[in-house]
Length: 359
Image (cartoon, rainbow, N blue to C red; front, side):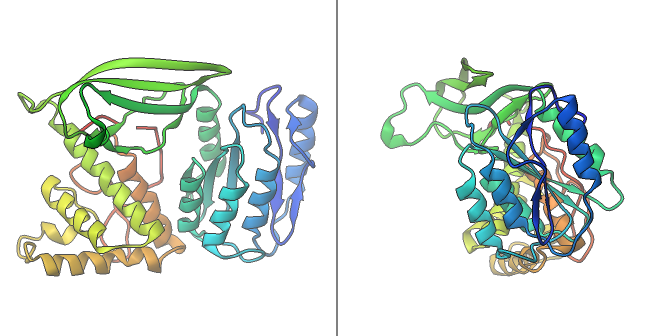
């Protein structure tokens, strides 16, 4: 609240069994409205149930102006227990109510959150999820996010690549670019994009977006080489593979596992030496790691932890760590950190900077 700037539009919504809004519509930030809003915050007390669907619907319903960036900062320390409680329907409702391309930033506070639901909400609404552990300061985490989004350099960012001589029947110049949706670029951040290309040649990279109310466009020449003369850029291929592993884990988590994705995960882990909690058995020299059937079965069994743990500390840690692969800025050989509970692995909070390069 104390970081908002004069003229910013804002509102506050408290929710438990009931939904209570500070004001019926967005208000301009001033010293007067700041004091009133802080008074509203002081009057909030923890109630009984958790109406996540109702709170998000009310918040998104107040956003009407698509000409400026819109943000929903969604804080929760629980799982939906009243109103609409179906995970898929809550996500679908938020997406259908988001008429202004608002970015939903989720803060899961403590371990009693449905971390899969938060990830789905962020994925479908151009945002990200931050996990705040019981011993961490939520105010510091929220302030860090606000400091980041408070200075947008370019919004609605889009990146395209034109390859000289590429025929329509040959497909796109670059595929599997990560992150998929850049959306915004903020002061002090670097943008690192990774992707793959099949055909070599001269290319042009186009970046478009908005700086305030003005449309901006930048063109950069590039050369897609057929073969590199040395290994100085070899790290880019592995960085792409780490990001792709993160995307596979996200797909399996949010949409369910399938055999093709599990096979690709195993292939990337072997080829690039990327050990995840779900493929760490491949590092065992005594294991029959070249037996495709055994490896597929082992990985599939371990990946079932995504289904089993939507909430609780293990689910919390599992998803916080998944993001480390998605947002990797260096091609680490092993999993970023560790999470306990039987699958092996990693687990730290998410500190995301929009990131990328090329394969």
